[in-house]
Amino acid sequence: QVQLVESGGGLVQAGGSLRLSCAASGTILSINAMAWYRQAPGKQREVVAGISGGGSTNYVDSVKGRFTISRDYAKNAVYLQMNSLKPEDTAVYFCNADILGSHSGGSTYYSNCWGQGTQVTVSS
Image 1 (cartoon, one colour):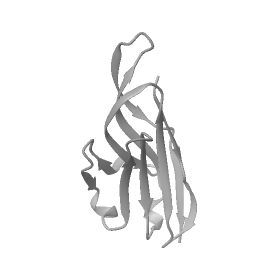
Image 2 (spheres, helix red, strand yellow):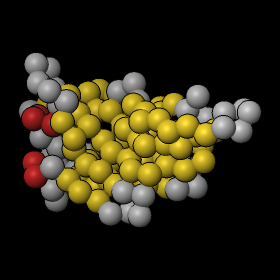
Image 3 (cartoon, rainbow, N blue to C red):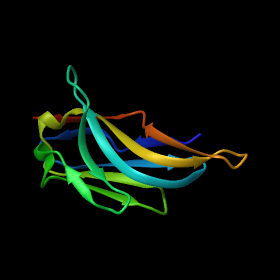
C-alpha cells in the first residue's frame, strides 16, 4: 500500500520561510498530479498549489509569488517552498497525490493518497 509522509512544518515569524516535503513510499509505478492543501481551524480544506505529471504548476491567488511547488520524480516527492509567510497561512498542510501502484501479485491499482498533515504556524 502506498503512503505519503510529510515533514517540514513548524513555527515561524511573519515574513519567514519554511519548506515542506512529502515523499511517497510503497510499490509505485507512477505518480501523476501532486498537490498541497491546507486547512485552518474552522475552515474548509483548500488547495494551495498543484503540479501535474508534466510539471505544470498552479497556485491559489493568496500564495502566488510567495509559494513554489516542485517535485522530484526520482524520489517520488513533492515540495512546497513558502516565503514571506503571513499569519493567515497558519494551517495544517496536507500533500495529495494520484498514484498508480502495484500489488505483490503484479496487479495494479490507482489511489488518490493523502498525507497525515503537518502544522504550520506563523506568528505576527
